[in-house]
Length: 210
Image 1 (cartoon, rainbow, N blue to C red):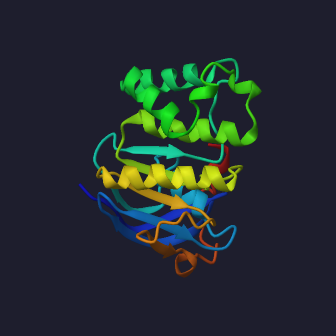
Image 2 (image 1 turned 120 degrees about the vertical axis):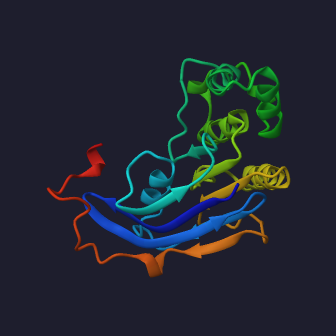
């Protein structure tokens, strides 16, 4: 089933930042969000992931189909690399095979027994992204996934994305880096930018503190 967004408006700090956003993301496809800093890319992704309410519009996706990766890696520092992935595999019910595959695909097998607290920034990022592989979910929503990654790791992650698409998955990404995915479509959010004058809700509720 397609991931469809229609006439969506989203807010940051109690003010609408984007309005009228719409797209259809089909299985096997990737969509890259572009726009200047502050345009609302992260706010849009957070809304699509269900972490904050939309101001207006509709979001239609199959139940339990989205996996979200934000700027934060979301790691448990006291657990090892393998234990972190095993924790998430248990949450999503995907099992040990998914953990083994994620370790291999994200080049983390040699670090499996190392505590997350002792990883470099790039290693932590790879581990954070490896969580996507243990979710078993078809639609990946990614906010600047290549932060802290070197060129080799960016290429590695691009291969993971490409394999995910080939398997019928989909990816929605906000990134300034060329991942080498010429098949990816691009959506420039600049035309959907609001003037910021309209309050998101009566009473000026500030979702930044939600």
